Amino acid sequence: MSDQTPLVLDVDGTFLKTDMLLECWWAGMGRDPMATLRVSFTHFRDRAALKSKLAKIAQIRTDLLPVNADVAALAAAARADGRTVVLASASDASLVQPLADHHDMGGRIFASDGHLNLKGTAKADALVAAYGEGGFDYAGNDASDLAIWKHADKAIVVGDVAGVSQLGNVTQVPGGWANRDVLRAMRPHQWVKNVLLFLPMLAAHQFGLATLGLVMLGIAAFSAAASCIYIVNDLLDLEADRLHATKCRRPFASGAVPIGVGMAACVALGVVALGIGALLGTAFLTVVVTYMILSLAYSLRLKRMRWIDIAVLASLYTLRVVAGAAASGVDASIFMLIFIFPVFITLGCVKRMTELALATDDAHLPGRGYGRQDRGDLLNMSVIGMVGALVIFFLYSHSDQAHALYPTKWLMWVALLPIAGWLFRMIRLGYQGKQDYDPIVFALRDKRGIGLLLITLALMFYSAG
Image (cartoon, rainbow, N blue to C red):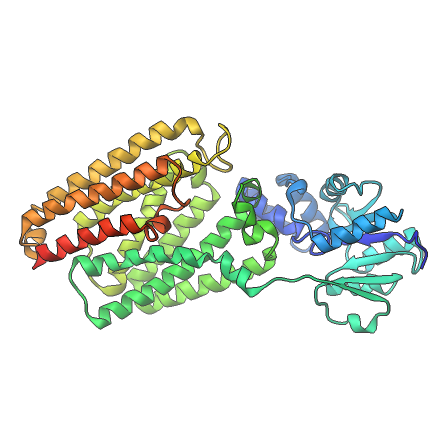
C-alpha cells in the first residue's frame, strides 16, 4: 500500500456519531412540521430528493454534530502523513460540504446531489472512478458499505458489521451504543414526578392494596409515556442541547445513542403506555392520550411561547393527579385540582427562573421565549401562584368535604405555614439558580423541602384524626 493512498470516510455513523438525514428530519419537525411531513410522504421512495428537500427546510449546524473521536484520530494521522482525506456520504452535498470545510477536509467530497443517492454500489462506482480499483482506503459502519470495501485497499470497519469476515486487510474501530445510554435517554430519574398520581388516593384516605396496585400500574403507564415524550423532546432539541453547557452531554446530542435507536425506543414506550392505559379503562387511557398529545404539542411549539409554556407545564403536572384519580377510581376533589394548578404555575416559573439564573448571557434561552430580563416578571408570577394556592387551600378548609375528611379545622390552617414555607423556598432557590433544571426532581431530593412537606402531611393526618 502506498503511503499516499487516499483515506475515504463515510459520514453517518462513521465520521459522525449521528445520521444527517435523521438530524434534518427532526430539525424540520421542530421548525416546520407540516412541510417536513409533506416532503417525507411525497419523496419517501426517492431518498436523494428527500435528503435535498429536508436539508432546505432545516439547515442544521454541521459544526455542532458529534464526531467519532477514533475515526477523527485516524483522519488526523493520515493528514499528518500527507495523505488525502475525503468524505463520501449518502447525505446531501449541501450538508457534507460545510462539514468537510469545518474539519479541514474541504478539497473534494462525494455526496448525494438530489438526483443520485450515493450509497452502496453507487458510492463504490464513484470512488473506483476517482481512485481506481483498490486505490483507496474506506471507513464505514453499515452492511451497505460491503459493496465499497470490496473495491478498497483497506477496509476500516466502525462497530460490528455482519459479513466483514470475508474481506481482507480489515481494521476494526470501536463503535455502537450501550443499553445504559438508552436508559439514560429515557430519563428514569424523572419518573419520580409520577408520585403525583398518589395524591387523589391520599386526599380521599383510600389506602387499600387494590387501590395502591391500580395507582402503581398508572405510574408505570405514565412513566413510559413520559419517557416516550422525553425522547421526542430531545430529538427536537438537538441543536439547542448542543449549545447548552450541560445538556450537550445528553445521549442523542452527544451521539452516544443513534437517533434511529431512539426512535425505535420511543415507539416501544408509546405502545407500553397505551397498552397499560387501555387495561386501566377508558378514563385513564383518555388522560394518557391527552397527556401525550399535549406533551408533543409542547415539544413541537408551545415551549417556545412565553407564558403559554408555563401554563402547559402546570397542566401536564395536573394531568398526573387526574390520572391518579382515573386509575384508582377515586374521585379527585375539584378543590384539590384548583389548589395544585397555581402550585404548578409557581413551579413552572421556578423552572424558567433557574434556567435564566444559570444562563451565561442576556440572549433568549435556546428554544425558549425568555431572557434574563424576564426574571422579575417570572418572580412576580410565581408569587401570585403561591398566594393563589394558599387562598384556595384556606377556602377548601371551610368546604363540606374538608369538614368530613379533616374535622380539626385549625390544624389545616396551621398546615398553611409549612406549605407557604416550602413554596417560598422553591421560589427563592430558583431565582438564585440553586436548583436543578426541574423543580419537581429537585423537590424530591431537597431534604429541608421534604421536611416541610412531611410536616404538612403530619398536620393533615392529625387533622383527619
